Each structure stands twice: as C-alpha cells, then as structure tokens.
Amino acid sequence: MANASETGKDKARSSTRDRAGRETLRSWAPATGALLGEVPVATTEDVERAVARARRAQEAWALLPVEERAERVLRYRNALVDRAEEVVDLEVRETGKTRHEALISEVFVVADVATYYAKNARRLLAPQPIEMVRMKHRRSYVHYVPRGVVAVISPWNFPVVLSLSDTLTALIAGNAVVCKPSEITPLVVQKCKEIWDAAGLPPDLFQVVHGHGEVGADLIAAGVDKVVFTGGVATGRKVAAACGERLVPCVLELGGKAPLIACADADIERTARAIVFGGFANSGQICLSVERVYAHESVHDLLLERVVGLVSELRQGDPATGDVDVGAMTFPRQVEVVEAHIEDALAKGAVLRAGGKRRPGAGMFFEPTVLARCDHRMTVMTEEIFGPIVPFMKVGSEEEAIALANDSHLGLDAYVFTRDRDRGCRIAERVVAGSVVVNDVLANYAYPEAPFGGVKASGIGRVHGDDALRDMCQARHVNVDRFGSLEREPFWHPYDATTYKVILKATRALFGGGGLVQKLSELL
Ligand code: NAD
Image 1 (cartoon, rainbow, N blue to C red):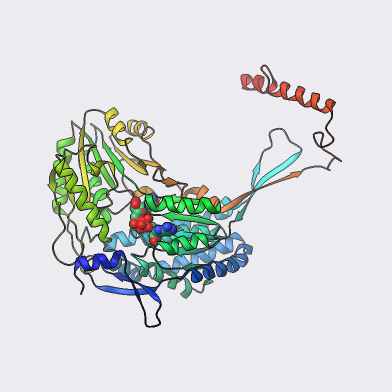
Image 2 (cartoon, rainbow, N blue to C red):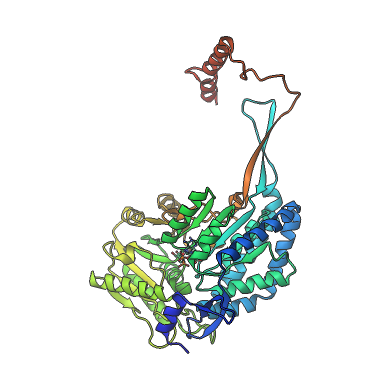
C-alpha cells in the first residue's frame, strides 16, 4: 500500500500505461492509499470520435417527442437508484466522503433533478408565444431547438451529481452529452456510464472520456455546441477563453467563499449546528461550504464556544468501514492549501480553537479546524479554502457584516442567520452572491426548480431552474404573418421622401415628448 504522500503525488497526476501501451488513469482511495482501479485516457482522436458518434446519436434522439426522451431518462434514474448502493460504495472509497453524503448529495439529487425536468420538460420546452406590441398582424413564438452535443466537464468533489445532473438536463432537452470527469475520481462516473449502458439506453448518446485537463481542452476543441464546466476559477478562465475562441456558449460553475452572517438575534443552537454541517460536510470540499463566519459581538462568544463543542463530538475516520461524520479529504493538493491557510492565519494573529493538523498515517484525514480572531488580512478570509476550516470574525453591526461579506472576488452562496425573517431577506438582498439562504446552509444546490450559479469570479450562467433546461436549447424566434401577405412592406425598397416623412411622423407620434407612448405610460 502506498503511503499518503506517495498517494498524494500519484493522485495528483496518476497516469501510467497498460499492457497495450495505452495511457491509463489510476485512482487511489484517499482514506487508505489503496489503488482502486484504472481507466484508459482518451487521445485527441478518441475525443473527436466520441463527439462524432454523439452527433449521429443526437439526430435520432432529437426527433423523439420530449415525453419519450423524459421517459428514457427516468428509466436511467430508476436503474441508478436501484444500484444506488454500488455507486455509494465506490464513491465513498474513491472520494473519502461519508456514505450519507454520497447518497443524499449525489444519487438523491441526481434523481430529484431528473424527475423535476422529466415532469416539466413538455411545458418548459413547448413553444412560448410572444405578444407583439405593435405588429399585431404578425404572430411570434419561441421554438426550443436542442443545441446538439453538450460537453460536461466536472470536478472531483461531487463527481456523480456534477457530471449527471447537467448531463440528464441536456439529454431531456434533446442533446447528446460527452462528459469529461475529473482525473481524480474517474471510476465512479465510469460506473454511472455502465449503468446507462446496462439500462439499454443508446450508448453513443451519453459517453464518458477520461483524462487530465488536456482531454477537457480536446473536448471543447472537438466541435461541441455547449460546454457546462464545473471547477476552479483558474481553469474556468481557460475554458471561457477556449469557448470564446470558438463562440461556443458555456456555463461556468466556479469557486465559492460563502460568508455566514450571524445576526444579534440568531438562534445559537441552530446557527452553530449549521456552521458545523456547512463547514465540515465533505471535509469542507464544497463550493457552498461555510468559508467565513461574521458573528455579531453580542452572540459571537456563545456561538464560537458551541461550535467548538460540537466539533469535538464529530467522529472522523474511514467512511468505508464505519459510521463517521467526517471522512478523508479527496485531493492531496487541497491538503497543502488547507495547511497554508492555517499557517498564514496563525502568523497574523488568529487563534486555533479546534483541529489544525492532518492526522498522521496513511489516508488524507484533516481535523475539522476552527479559527477565531480572523480578519481580512488573512487568506483564510479572502481566498477559497475548499477544506475543513471555519474561520470566525467578530463584527459590531449588520452593516459591517454585509460590507465584509461583499469584500470578496467570489460570489456563489451566502447565509444569514436571524430570528427575524424580514431582516434576513433585507440582508440577503444586499449580499452579492448567486444565492443567499436565510437560516439554512448548503441545501440550495439541491433545489432543481431554483437557479444555481455564481456572480463575480464564481461563474457565468445558471444550472437548475426552468431557464437551465431552456438554455440547453437554442431559442429560435419564429415570426409569421397572421393574414395574407402584402406585395411589399411600406419600409422596403424603393425608399422615397414621402415614406421617410410618414415614418418620421409616426416615430414622433409614438416616442416623442407628449407622444403616444408617454401619454399611455402617464395614464397607466
Ligand atoms: P479543476 O478546475 O482543477 O478541474 C475541473 C475539471 O476541469 C476537471 O475535469 C479537469 O480535468 C478539467 N480541466 C482542467 N484543465 C482544463 C482545460 N484547460 N480545459 C478543459 N477542462 C480542463 O477543479 P477541481 O479541482 O476538480 O474542483 C475544485 C473546484 O471546483 C473548486 O474551486 C470548487 O469551488 C469548484 N466547484 C464549483 C462548483 C459550483 O457549482 N460552482 C461545484 C463544485 C466545485
């Protein structure tokens, strides 16, 4: 068995060659260092062939009525749920996360998203009539046309949901999908693909190509029609540039630095439990994790003490062998990032109240860590942590908390805890983030009906919600004369002075000061 640091290096760049000389990706269990398996790395030609096959499969798929596509996706959902424990077992070993997290945050959410879109796709993708404001003699509607082949490029922290949720959305909308999962967690996504094939669904319609970042870059270059990317900000910029070069639309779901504002009237017990769950679920490796706490001075000390108490009760260990609350970290480089944050914070005056170090031995277990007396000179308050650290900062007012929450280059999620719901909503409307949740944490990614995504460097575009399904399509505007057509429209060639004067008069009558539009708006 490899020791933890060897595993770390291997897992960061774990390619080797099989007997046939093909490059393969190896996957290691972060909790034990054991080798779990390997998959072949796709060459540029493999990726191009996958996209070509997907394009052919998509042509037939797009011709099916939306209800039939939805029904087949539900067949996949059923197969996935039937085999949920196989997926959970493998995922727990490959990521180091707990069984609860693998079930509820991955399989459950995929099933929920598939169900929501399958149930609503017919309504959401039905042609949408547009009421014409002036051209009443013409009829307009938006017709939703599948884009073609969608690339889904996913990270390692939630390999199943971040690969499948967007994949199934794209499929219901009539697209084919080629997915490139993270090189750190290829096996569990490969398992999901096997379940697709075993359910008798068209194998070319949903394909998986494996490899490092180059394979993701090859996929974007292979002529896909849309990219849904989830990953880090630096990679997101590269993906955006590659998509910009090709004028391919992309959704970018990037990093987060979620603030949690604890108001003076916050319920201490609920807030403390939310901080512990929001900070340490999946060892803090969640883009929505509670990454900084701004606690009002009147509740700060009580809240901090309660959080420290709850952290001391957390059970950490190998989730494959028993009931634990916190498993292993997944990605070796992330352990180093966490250590660097703690070192920087302690050097600048933070106080360590819990945890603070990696557990010795094989396996990447990092103790749930609480830091007090933090401030914005410390990277732990300003840069993404993506690991099990919750830093606390005392604030004197709501205004100060909002200003500090907004003092970030990231804006994915934010949380407000208060007994006064109106105050919660007032604060939520002033915090700059894609989602702000009052009196809860993490759960909002799991609402299929609500849009999810970031502002600032946290990303572009949204997944989930009704618009995300429609965005898997091109919105084609169709406009048609209701009655018989004239020989020519008045503003077509040939131009003449009389028509010009008529148009000028009409423009003034409609839009000029005291014109029809102004009068109507005064009346209404
Ligand atoms: P990453 O950016 O290193 O990798 C993500 C994926 O991109 C991987 O599959 C990788 O192989 C691929 N990739 C790398 N270079 C590429 C390139 N040039 N072109 C195309 N693909 C390329 O991210 P990660 O370390 O796997 O994931 C952690 C990050 O993901 C964190 O920053 C986290 O906040 C973010 N994340 C965001 C969300 C969200 O919904 N906003 C969800 C989960 C994770």
